[in-house]
Length: 473
Image (tube, rainbow, N blue to C red; front, side, top):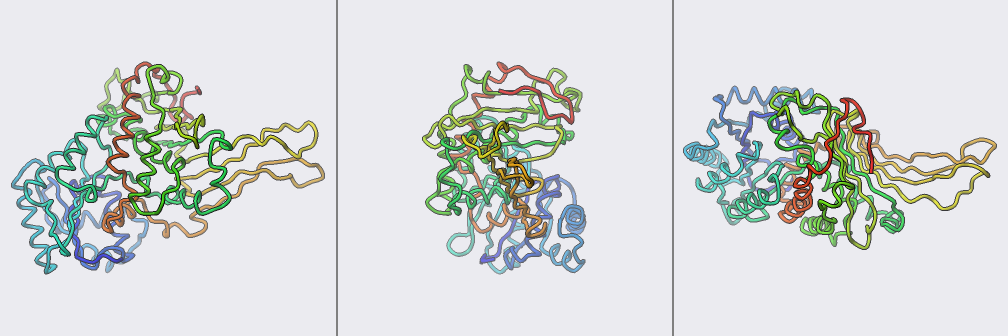
């Protein structure tokens, strides 16, 4: 790795589920692969009273439980834990930030110079504003300057609840940081198959000239989960599926399929083209939402802990979206997600228009449509459905599949976890896989009117373990 000056990573909410399941396993993987700076330190910050020794035990247990590299050697684990310490503090207490500043000064003394500072907010969104304000007032957001080091902030979704709250958060961020210091995490953008969509489209002569409404009939973006809300009743009931994954993961997947070729792989070029897709989304109005949106709730949702017994929060949605530009005019994009469904699957399916001719035997039914499927999870890969003559004496045409499955080709360990990529790119300062201010604003401008008119769409019900509500557009 080409990083340079020493780097200190501060994780707020470090004893929470995100840090335990995702951040420490990812950081350990980066450490093991040599992708962290040669001099680095991780400071955990949370309300819990812990000694550094107890905290290091907590971190070790998280790595042992959730790292895909296990079993690691005790030496390797000990080497990583040497870089980890803990500072107890309260998120809303100014003195806690002064104490944190003292701790970071001691870390810098150990490095012999002022280090880069990366602040990761692994906390609920309602705590963002307070933490950011205290970071600013304590002076912790001030970079060392010159060649001595940068300061950056990593923020998890959701970025607000609607246009107004998202803009308020961004105004607050822009008062404290420059745009190049702000890294908003949509970890789906860091998934291997999604990163490969642009290479697939723009590095092959086979596909891009067919990539338009002239040849493509529809695009489906699906994010299905077998899991229910997992005890997060208070959060989920106030959020719903559309806010939880529609405004971010789903629309970002749509953008990668639909965007124009960026002038370069520089972050500003890629982010600009994603934003241009969102600019051209046909707005949902009260008039068309009833025919372009479905919402539903799984049976038993109202019985979940901390859920309103009269709740109308959706756990499933399907939207029929359109992009009003020359390439995609009149092509429907079906955006669908739900919890407690029959399978866990995230994929993008590009379906081409039916072939107008077929070299088939007389009388054979002919509904041949080619398709390309980008499987984001669980089995990352790309597959193309095409048609061939079935072996035998008759000229019967049948569907065949041409696939590339990542794990079969490179193995599981070679595929970086999304959070490895997020952390690695943030330390490098590469914002390509992080939504810009413009992207967040434009996606909320599309989603907010749907939420405003949501109640004009009947709330359907579906069984746990089913394919969702049995309705379609």
